[in-house]
Every structure is written in structure tokens, then in C-alpha cells.
Image (tube, rainbow, N blue to C red; front, side, top):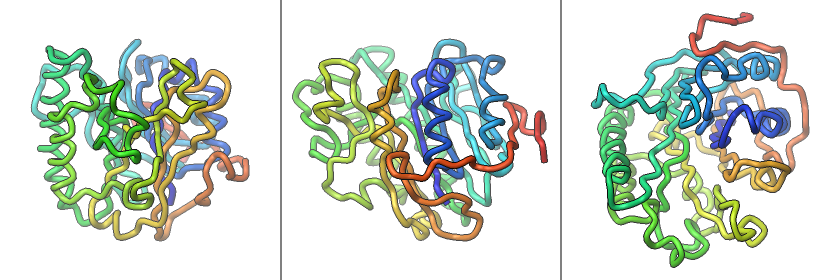
Amino acid sequence: MKIATFNVNGINSRLPRVLEWLEEARPDVACLQELKTSDETFPALAIQAAGYHAVWHGQKGFNGVAVLARTPVVERRRGLPGDPDDTHSRYLEAEVAGMIVASIYLPNGNPQPGPKFAYKLAWFGRLIEHAASLIREARPVLLVGDYNVVATDGIEDIYSPNSWRNDALLQPESREAYRRLLAQGWLDAINARHPGKAVYTFWDYFRDRFARDAGLRIDHLLLNPPAAARLVDAGVDRAVRGREKPSDHAPTWVVLDGAGATSDAGSAGTAEAANPGAAAGAPGTPAAFSLT
């Protein structure tokens, strides 16, 4: 079973790229971030026609997260607990194919120091608290998405830390929060499968950084022990970033073994393009638009 995460940087403006990738890579589950659209303008019919059920948590012009799957999706939680006044659409948790999957868009935190960085750390703290209950689940749990944190100064996480030194992504407080999350027992799938390798997920649009592979690894796939025990592979569909009008992120994925998988493990750079199957989708309310 292939589970992917993709910060699309605007679902409607990048829809051709997203649909192209879904057809080529054929993930069983796809978590999307930075939709930048309201619930009402999410492209439900296009996603449905591509063969995916979907639940989403939109916000006009900002943020927004979704979970797509080739089998029915049941929403578990919309937003993190702990701050009833937080209206940002950054967390969506769903049940799909016997797993719990969360799509995460952690705050960027810039400029720092300041209120945006304080919000980032507070949000991270709420995620850590909620994740402490999920790590104990007997079934596979995956916390995937754009964490907006570069874990280390190593080549596996950033091409060169010097020009990013004052960015919120590299601050000691951000890194410490990420370490606290991992210390609960979550496995960083990319790091586990490619230790010490430069497997980046984000390249800024400026200064020709993609062509120079001047990237960062800020999109993470974290697995609880039952999911980690099924880990087969993990990678990044880097070629997607090099296409016309791309997101500044590339899709990042993990393959777990076990019954219920409906796609092969190939990346978008190599996977055979195929129709993922009969259309079956659902908008934000899981029962609506269902064809099953």
C-alpha cells in the first residue's frame, strides 16, 4: 500500500499537475496540504473522476489539508485539540483501509522571533500532545505532511544551512519539538530508508534552486510501530517538481506491505500511467457524493 503526501501550493491552480501525478504514481492514499481554497471550491468532481474518495478541511486563500484514497475515507478529526480559537485549517485525521492517517500542515513560523513563531511552537506542542495518544494505537498510524522543520544541518536535510540560518525552519526550538515528537516512538520513513542521503522534498522557486538541487527536507512521513513494521520503501517523486507550473514541493511517499494494497510502488518518474479505477469520491462530508 502506497501512502503519499504532497504540499500542492494551491489545489485549483495546480490541479493539472496533481491529477497528472495521481494517474502516474497511483497512491492508495494521498494527503494534500496548502490547498488555498474554501471547502466550497475544492475540486471534488475532478478528484472523484480520478478515482478517489476525499475529505478536506479548506480555508480560502491559505492553509487547507485533504486526505484522498482509492477506498472510502472516514473523517476522525478536523483540527488539533487544545485551542478552540485556532481557526487555521492545518490538521485532518481520517480512517482509511484499516489505518489512521493525518494530513499535517505545520505553521511556517516566519518571521522569527515574533507571534508567528510562537504560534508555530504552540501548534507543535499541541501536535505532540495529540500524537502521544495515537502512538499507542494497535493499528498503523501515519502522521504525514509539511512539517516546516529541517531536522538537522546534515546534507540529508538541507543543501546548505548557512543561507537559512535565521529561518524558522532551522531554529533550535523547531528542531527540539520535532525530536520530542520522534522520541514518542515515531519512525521517520525517509530517514530510515535513505540514511545520510540527500533526499529533498522542497526547492524554493528563487535562484534556480531546483536545477541546482539546492533543496530542503521538510515534508515528513512518521509511522507508529505497527506501520513501521510494515515499511517496504519510501521516496520522493522529484520529477514532479521539474514540470511546468509546479508546486515548490515534490510528492513524498511510503510503501507498506500487507493486504489491501491497490497500487505498485513506482514513483511518478517511473510508474506506468494508468487509470486508477472506477471513480468513487466524497467531498468534505464523507457520506456525500459517494458512488459506493
